[in-house]
Length: 317
Image (cartoon, rainbow, N blue to C red; front, side, top):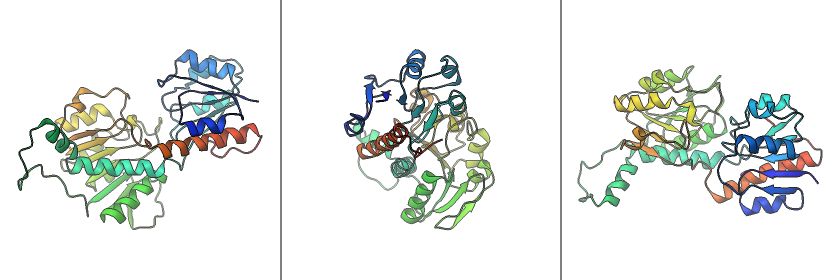
């Protein structure tokens, strides 16, 4: 029986599916692993189920000679916290959990779009503070989302799910940036650069994978192109957006507002963002529904079982 290390507490349904199939150890802490814990996991276990912020860097792999571990079955679709090249060089396979997160993450994108354009965060704080004096015709006027132009930075599974919701739910025209044009079930407009996309839309939604290739893809030039009436929404990875440039753009009123579920130095959130009324801040809720986290876990289980049985992995990266 293979020895399995699970780096965080997971839903009970997922752990039950693993019991009896593996000699399993579940780490009790909800915090990311330390360097020493990660090297120990590679040394002492056959397979590991890690997740976001368990930073399996090249340095971690180089610190372990001939690791016992042969598979990191990542819990999550994003895997930029794992140096996949270093893992392969060490003989360690990596899988992820695409598909299971698509709709939930797209839903959070729409949540943020509505909250920031309709000033829902500001309104909720006003009511809770006791400062609301009642309805009047010019109170807290925001942007009407229906019929506007959405720009989707990254037209993968999640980007396409966002596009469907925006087009069919809010009659929005869909613009997007990706490496090359993609086929879609609705009419779309492809733009060759992120800045050109930003200049053409009312709301720019970031939905690209994280990693070195997309770090600071949304920079000062993109934000300036979005313009003083445009909104930014990020449900991807925090470092896709240059956070310092975003703060500067907000302070200079170069954009109208932002809705964020992820942050460049998560879980640290700059006070400059917290203080701004036109910024909606969520604590990385993209997949935070029980059935979604269970579905993610079951995909990781399927990859672990396939490896244990010598079958082809379902979601290799």
